[in-house]
Image (cartoon, rainbow, N blue to C red; front, side, top):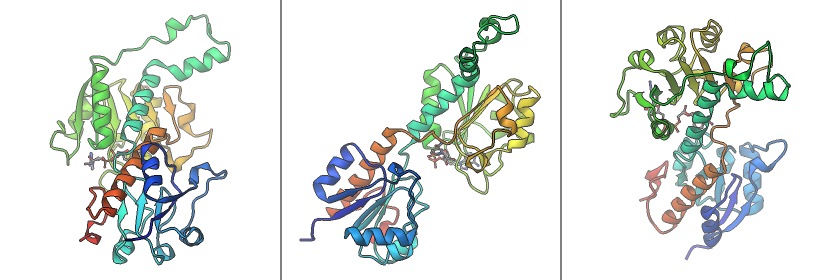
Length: 325
Ligand SMILES: NC(=O)c1ccc[n+]([C@@H]2O[C@H](COP(=O)([O-])OP(=O)(O)OC[C@H]3O[C@@H](n4cnc5c(N)ncnc54)[C@H](O)[C@@H]3O)[C@@H](O)[C@H]2O)c1
């Protein structure tokens, strides 16, 4: 009988998945996210840590699993993300090491933030908060009711671009808020619209497509010009999906009603960036997936996969099923 596994977990890990892992393995839990400044191991540093702990199961979120890490005697690697870009899967496969992933772990989290951005944009919540705090409730001879009137979202049309895990989690939420939801996704059978038709029909356009060579810059000046006057643009996916300069121009001119963005060019913009000067824009710094539930979800998915693998099965979330006979 193989020895009890020893798991080094450098991902944030919690909930029933962690409890189960403690039942089947000795666990060293040292999440990268608990370190200030943030600690991301490169392959050499991670290999040293794995060796020092004597671990044979490795569960990571952002650390680099490649080269010397895969020269160690690992029984399994868990990558707490949908797309384990931080793991050299080919090398793991060559060494017969199973790699588990956690697809859609943060779909609900991003969908909730998308709804939050939508309501914050349409109702001017951020500007209202700023004015209240600054003592400007009555400014320029007006009362707030005069300045903050808006259209409601119920009864309006939302266009979802990218009907994957987040797009679907967003769709039912918007439907629940009374919206008619249309969708564009060349790879989803139930997507209803071509992109141009969606842009022309939607009061709110929300991007949830994967970033690929095909989708990079898919929303440029031409696409923004197709959107309805006063429409709202949301992107809680990747900034590279849209042309930021063209978006700024469309917002500045008043053609678009507003925008909510959870991903910024280069992950960070300076305070003098044109987006920061626009009151009809709500900005968030890539926090869509940042919920404790995301961590509960990936912990459960990775550990369910490990349990099945150790029992001789072939888990659904194996990235390299060919390593299991
Ligand atoms: N803000 C955040 O914190 C956060 C967190 C997780 C994911 N994301 C981003 O959200 C997006 C969606 O993530 P997901 O987990 O739903 O991924 P997913 O892979 O489940 O869905 C992506 C969808 O994009 C579709 N797609 C591909 N090419 C397309 C095209 N040309 N036009 C329209 N759709 C196209 C795919 O068919 C797929 O359905 C990704 O860009 C991802 O990087 C952001």
